[in-house]
Each structure stands twice: as C-alpha cells, then as structure tokens.
Length: 121
Image (tube, rainbow, N blue to C red):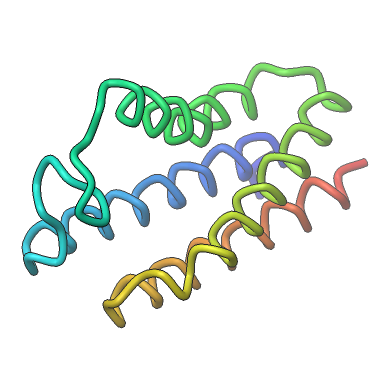
C-alpha cells in the first residue's frame, strides 16, 4: 500500500481530472457561453480569481508529497474541507446532471482526503 502522502497526492490528481472533465463537458454540451459566466463578461479580475481558486488543488498534489507530515495532514483536512463545502454550496447552481454527478464524485474524493489525512498518524 502506498504511503499516505502519495495516496493524498493521487486523490488530488483525481479531483483535478474530475473538475477538468466537467469543464470539457460544459463546453461540448454548449452549457457555457465562452467569455461569459452567468451572462456576465469575463474580466481579468474574474479570470485571475478563478485561476487562483483552481490552482489550489494543483498545489495540493505537490504539497501532499513535500510538506512535513503534521503540516501536510492539516493542509489536506482544511483544503479538502473547503472544497467539499464550496462544491456543496455550488451544486444547485449547475443545470446539467453530469455536473451534479461530477461534483458529487469530487465531494466523495474530498471526504476520502479528509478521512485519510485525519487518520494519518
């Protein structure tokens, strides 16, 4: 069985792939208007904010491998907890069944991340 930090890193990769799949499906199904979000034109600030938000799971892939165990443990619990709540709040705003399914999958991954990190001794 791989060490906990490798397992956590792999789960973060799975989360990112799940988010990416949702974005690709949203584009392919036409559920998104390019350059707009909820009918509002994307600004540089909005794009930057989204980039900052979405780089967090990417950073967690690396941080799960390199941070000391105690810091790593709490970083995974806090960040996965944030994403679980963030996606839970956002879930009703997505129209597609595929979006709801993929967000549910990502929340399961977040729950597993919290469980692994919490039980890491």
